[in-house]
Image 1 (tube, helix red, strand yellow):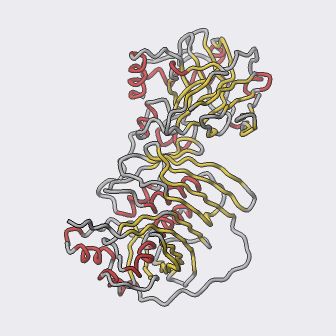
Image 2 (cartoon, chains in turn green, yellow; image 1 turned 90 degrees about the vertical axis):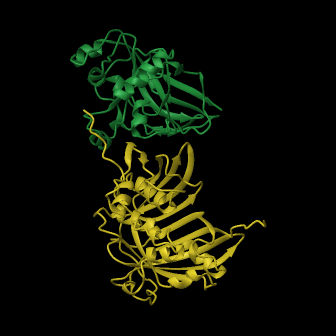
Image 3 (cartoon, one colour; image 1 turned 45 degrees about the horizontal axis):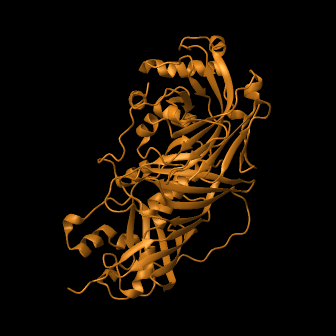
Length: 219
Length: 292
């Protein structure tokens, strides 16, 4: 986590706008190996927060995968000791989202992968939805590539209570002197198996009543 | 609180323990694994990457036993960077489960694997008999032969996770020999009880010596050729524990354009059961000696 904070602060010092946070390393055996109780948390690249319908340039040698997630934007800070209800009350916006991850970057070992946001490449946001829990967690996305359905969400991978998730993120950040602020985005973990995508394809996640988000990948 | 990561490849560990540690992949996501290349010089041993890929595939299958794998060695791997194994769950069937794995290193694919896993079921069974072969106890360890070829005892190593004894070690004089050979193989220690690890260590072992079979009729023993595995196929016929000697008999029916094809059969010494079969095409080139 210390290396992650250093990488985050270096990126901010280099001009990256602060965007927010993601959860990752959701496999229990990996969490146990690292001594983590629950998912890891990593920072989002504020230079790569895209709107649905925009394009993403795939760098040569990339192994880009798409994940369908729910994104939250906070209206108020959430502290590690907050109640789930208070954390839920801090949510200003809920959006369908795609996270693009690149398994080829960074090129280093596990420490480098953790420090550099667990393969994070970009966040793609759909329009804010008025839907609230429990509909939010119960609506499962379909993921399409070039209009053809490629993945259906696994209900078991739906994010848990969003308030609890925010408190978990805050608790992960607190020991390294970071926290959830008003304006922060949080993407809540993928509902689907990461889907390999490539330049020339358009990937979309359709959350039904919650909206749709899409990104075109270019060379 | 994050736990300190145990050191990989501790120098004090034995060769099999080091291999077993390399087969312990970090599961970064449900279908994404990170593996270490281990210490060494030159390019990675292809059998090690194949074995790691089998582990990655097998860790996404429950239940099922590896019964076949087909792999292509796409680029030489290096000891300098970790390897990422990306698994694609092709099919989960009632009897058979299929996985695809691509191993990436430094942003490039180095190995691709298709692997199939099956539930055990009753049915037909037959096999050819195990060939007659001298007992492994009567044969020299490959490392002794190797030191003799190099004519340098200081080069003698005990770093092979799998002990190898060639039934015809004198081939290394360099004269042409028939395109078939037999070797004995066994792990240099105890393999853990996980059947997938036994299968992976056998896959690792199955990539040894096959190219040599194709090179024999051309008088190109180890050290006098440039060689690389191009692909590798492996079939595990029955549940198997790699705890003792296995006879690996191989034959090369054809070679052309610097590519030699080899088929192998692996037999359990204890009862002669044919436990596995393999096929490999290898690149065998004669080193160029430019005139001065």
